[in-house]
Length: 588
Image (cartoon, rainbow, N blue to C red; front, side, top):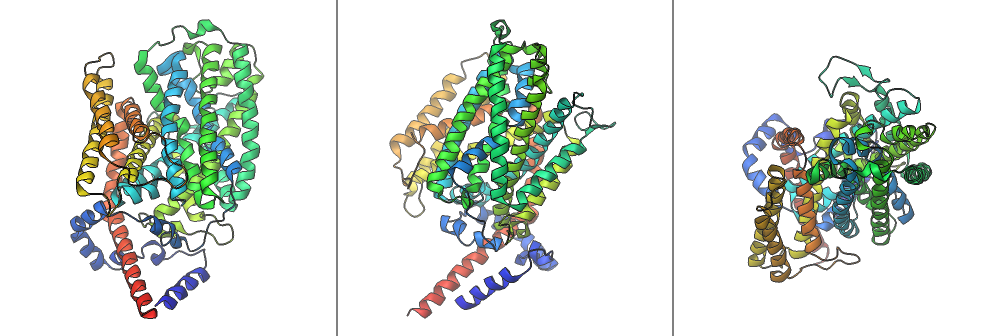
């Protein structure tokens, strides 16, 4: 039996990478015929219950699931690459575009506090990602981690939001790239877009954004190592520009521009914080590189924690320099830094800033094409989307089909939708995934299958629900009554008591092998609270769009994803049983 299995793997390896058949897209038993599919639909309820409680094993994610790609990705990255990937994936549209937009519309000079609040929340999530990436070094990032700790259905919810984050994030950055390119040409930001009579927010067609996405993705598909080298160069140039912006900005600073510091109050600060969180969102791409990292236990903590610490400081300094250089009411929401330098007599500086912004956004697209394709690859390995997208090219060692999926989808959205529509939707999706990651970290530390007593499992479930409910309550109360305080006398003590309950009543079931999140359960619990609070600071329109996308995802899951993952999981279980029987016969 083992020989047959090895022969099948060899036959798969000899198959051409460039193929397109029904079996590549729908290999599961449920989709082999209409009668099979109808039978599967009648079992939807039972299958959903199975997927709701089932959890993947770490060994399965590192072994059997990876084999779906047929070829391995190349281990060619070290901590230096990851550090620069951190800069390349994060610093882009967020700081150069959203800073001006949110300072003008919501936070005023207090935009620096918005970046600080978002940075603290992001760092808490970075801690969680780092521990998981060291322990489970696979391409799937948060999807793989949630599949192991919270189960298959929770992982699907994350997968849907990851897909949304990848596609919308690419589109948002590409649209911003066009705005800064036109500034470099000394033209109006919308001058190179095609004006139509479509609904506002979708009426400016952007062919340049599409072209930029295609070029960045093509580079990423050819070689991970080559992309890393290009990222070094572009990020270094971008950092020089950033240093110039900070120094020149403070050289032309006026303290009078900081007054009033809180024109829209604390509500404006947190509303802006929820939007500019988009600027920190790229760091999770680094975790997806774990499968291509030479020494994950050493390289990932240095790359993730090091780059994000420096980026948080850079963002706060850049936001402060902009607020001191120009009155918040005069800030240009399309090209804030370029216009600010022009206002203080440094007209030539706007071209340098625009060039640096273009470099930054280009690296965001480059690193995004790498990391997001690896997310898609692992999601396809689990058969949530067709496994054809999980195939890794034998020569390049890159997932070309997964990259094409993101590129084509992102291009379609970038062609129509403006940045404001995209960023608010993206922030909800990003914050939601980061919240789930924090919950998963708590589950990982305090629950071990077959070891944790049922009474402790029940305590953990209740306390986690209290943490989530109290955090949601705080966010809702803030949204309904930002100047009130009585509601916090209930929600905050409940959150604190639930976190303290985990700390005092439950023993940790797992100790990290190399590096772990400090101050557990306090920091993960605080991360849950902050992410939900920032989500609650977003406008209702963002949640309506998020809700529509979620309904579409669930419909897809019921009619396709559920049955594909069910068949895949039970096929793997049968294979493990047969291999065990085969080993028993070979070693009586």
